Length: 388
Image (tube, rainbow, N blue to C red; front, side, top):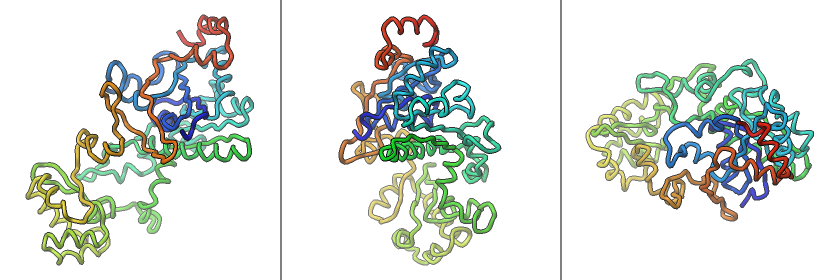
């Protein structure tokens, strides 16, 4: 696999860091999850469980190994340093300053491992006026202005379906780590990456900055092309209180739809800029889609060249034949479902290991790998370096 031989030490918790390292593990990287003393990774205990394992944890930690170390204990920190000296990548997502207080900052580890690629994931980054603010995804979306354009029909901000700050930080973070590893192949030198969730969201909105950049004003959300201003890029309710979407505003798609409806007279409205000038078409679609069920419209659009789709609930989406064909929902030997691998290589494709580590399961195994004797391991256990 693409990342065979790459070793990762993951100090992160919750979603962004574990997602980044999960993507690496699925491509062959050896990921060691260093869990804090006590209950370990918080997402072990978040949400629904199967056979005593949370779905959240299983889909962010499969194929990894777990060590539990007390980084406030000298022996635990020394062992963590020995691990960091052996790996290629360290991932941390503490609040800025915490890694340093634990003796696990880049400045602490780089002298031990000059080729180390070290990434810090945080809400606002390692510098700036918000550096000490606590935040998860929702707060970063609010500060960035992203939440202000995620509106309900009443025009009020609503909680987003996908934690964009978390997931964009994870995927951009993966890109940054791989860039640094690629460069290291030439120079032999590692690097430090400071990646903020807030920065990641802004970087992923080039198609939404028109009004803010060109006019210096916040957008009128309902008039923006991808947020409801375009009749052909919109969500419509059906008679059975379900929904359908038209998801492409190019004029040839509008022509295909309106021709079948016998309303070519509305085509000129679709050629206008998004907003009020497209209201006649939006109004027609609202009234028309409300006359029949979602299934009726699925059948009606079967031969129409337009980006039509029914709005499925999440369970229906997981059973969608496209996702199943692409193996984005896969089942283990017991029939339990898991999220598949999105990065699909022709050569050396990724491979899922469904094994989920117990808390601290690999403490002794990994200690032996870095040269600890059996006596030393017993001393570490007795000293509290592995926790209680």
